[in-house]
Image (cartoon, rainbow, N blue to C red; front, side):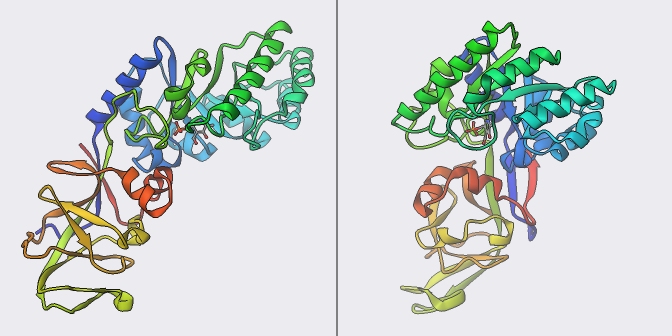
Length: 368
Ligand SMILES: Cc1ncc(COP(=O)(O)O)c(C=O)c1O
């Protein structure tokens, strides 16, 4: 019997098809595939190995350590790091050929100093904050940024910004961000700066804002086969790359009126089969889904019975007798079972980004 751990099946064939379909949509442009936060929960190394076999792929992570882990696992692609550049990391960034995020005057000064001390300048992209109010130069600083770059013979390989609302129905804010970004890029070009890469798109913009494509596209969620929100036109066919499943470890017939799990908030309406599934919130199962939630087995949905525990949850199968050792599907698509992760996100008032990156604990990733 399969009495072991929850599993996240990673369907690499779907990942590749998603990539090709996104490519078809955005035309002849390079892609930055975002594999931060352990590849949105899918396994950064496994996902990167699949993507690395495709042409024209740059990878992006958030933390310096995530980039090191990719290099240690044989990934040779360009890697863009989204977190703020740290002066201490410059020698290693050069050695490991990382592309850094330069987003403050202090960063530029540190680069200039590193260079004047005889170091090779690492590859870097300039990030401008056009409305996210997160990392990035203020657009009002553009003149001083570009003049500092010119005076100190620094050569940014790219320039970029990030949208706050590109996945929404109302695109007015995103369009104002795009307008500002265009003005900054034009200013840089007019001052003689030659950007190899200009990029602004995320999944929402890929679907919603073709004017924001420039010559490089950043893509995360769409690659993993999930719409970035329910407000975007899903013009690109994508399939869920992750199927999150858990093993049935025990099935018991109980009487009508039996309380199930902590707090006794669930009581059986009639005599029924209650199954114990060996997966809990410590493995990334979204605990609050139990109120309205269900799992899928044999192509049918069955209600979660009572509160999800740390390591286990119970399911009310009615008169169905599921097999101990088999698996139920929590979300994704596998065999005859399908529950979109976005359905759960909407029902419990969270986002698909939270649900996918929360896969952890004893969950084993199975590459298929
Ligand atoms: C700077 C940056 N670019 C691109 C992305 C990818 O966004 P998405 O997953 O919506 O495509 C992210 C994700 O948070 C990001 O932080």
